[in-house]
Length: 331
Image (tube, rainbow, N blue to C red; front, side):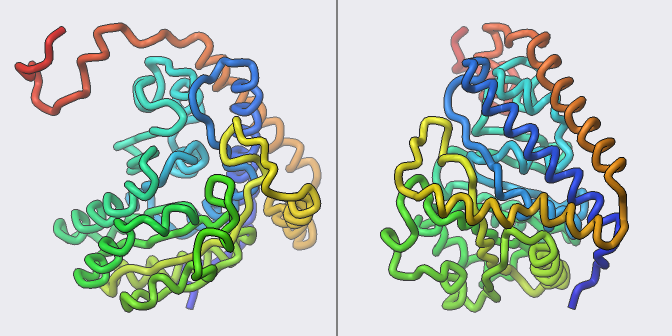
């Protein structure tokens, strides 16, 4: 049973947040093509409903951790577009001081703990964060996101066992976009219903339409209620789809254009806009206003990143150890 009502404000929030994620990622893709952004770059375009539906349930103090497709997660948690874009540029004003880049966004203030490049490495870390919340006696939960490729890492099984045994307040979310890096789910696992992996551990698990923020909201609400009540973890398989390749260097030869277009036809942003118009929550003038607002925010983030300074060379020796003046760093 849903504890958090979906109303007009929810739909308006969903639309604006998803549009910001989409436009920010599109701009990041353009800048990568211009070589303003270097290294790896994994875009989230198409999967926005997975985050929008979660954010209408979670508290600001709840934490998120994810893999390397992480720009939109940082946006969803309230990390500023300026600091995210600056991080993509590798600038000192970035949310990770320019040291993490695209794959390692981080914000302690916003309870966003990465951004991790090791496939599946964030899964046990998410359970560890949840353990800390339980140890401190808070009501807050951790949401540990992973891709469909990461569920075949051994660390997942170890983590599921411990999280279930200790009833940790963690929601494991598999963002199943069907292809991991570039190999279809059917070619990599005998269990194509990924959510069933959680069942042997006694973890309530289910598949969710990840293209629909309503379905995501309801599933996350139930999972969060369980976690806050001390009933332990939930595993949700969000069935979604990315419109772009695994990364910017992906030629995408493993899927057809027809398949891609079939998913674009049920785009979550378009679907939410249609609902808003049908329910008369807003008119076209409101959408134009939001589009202008989002465009201005993205443009400002690029300007901020362009004008920000590069990190000083001395920054190579900072943020390595907690202890100040650690004696074994030779500068």
